[in-house]
Image (cartoon, rainbow, N blue to C red):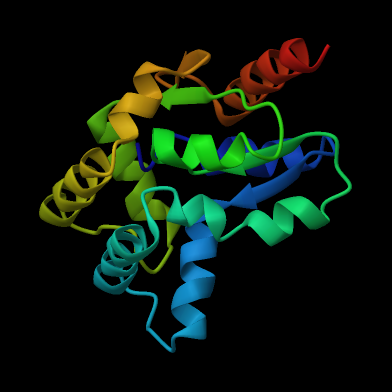
Length: 172
């Protein structure tokens, strides 16, 4: 779910040599191409519109060129929201899904501090975003993940270390 720690892990693993592709950034880039302000409302509506017009895996398709042009053996895709996106990604290689769990309060507090233009600043907006994410199927992806980490009571370094260890086991 938004604010659980996915991007924190991705940022932390960049220093370990992993290449990161962020699906939320793909939507933000698409908004920029369309001259849309990167507001919470616009990005949420754009994400839903893209899925409606181009299929439920549309957001993963936005990064197809980026995936194909990469020379990396392992890519970390940050922000998968549905099993349909996972199916798109499987066209390019083996996919393993790591779910990150965090409490509602932890996620809300993190999102308030993060500072992205689309981060919710009220509980109402937070709940709207959660409901939108659940509506596109994120709970199914979480339920079918290959491994899950509970990001409750972990430091940033502990979260990154745990994630790194899991990914390394998958690669070896």
